[in-house]
Length: 209
Image (cartoon, rainbow, N blue to C red):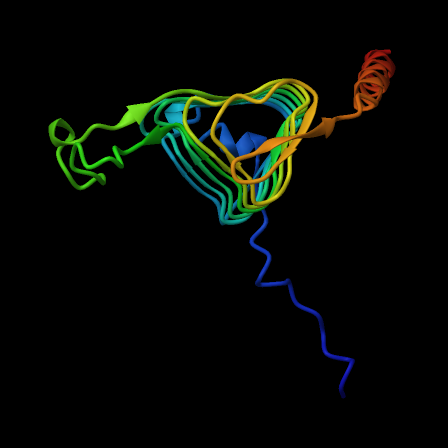
């Protein structure tokens, strides 16, 4: 009878790998309370350091066979995001990428001065690599593209579908192609961070008693 069928496990939800499982896969390090979607694609595990309370969602792609990726604590990487880590990528504590954001730390020569794409031997290309750094409390909107060598300083907020081509100053809200300053960002979240740490310290004391 309709409505009385026995429910089965949702086949569309593949779930997450957790910290204990991830530590067996060959990452450089994995902290506590880490969740990585079983539908994510990650290459170069030995070059990836992951802190605590990190979540990487479905269909995120991370390539770190060259370079490195350092993820701090309380990091979220949304679905369909891309991180190209050849020149090095760092996300500090409480930073995150919304769905479909793309971070590039290497780029081919688009001027015509050399051949391009990874099928060509390296001596015939002119790939430029430069670290991308997202400081604490940086949030990057959906579909945004970040180019090599860029530093997003503490507290930067970047609106959806933006293009980040240069360093962005601390505690600013930016948007556009290229991203430009709109206004100062509120700093109330720093008080929330303090309260979170106090709460965690209290829990540790209770658990140690």
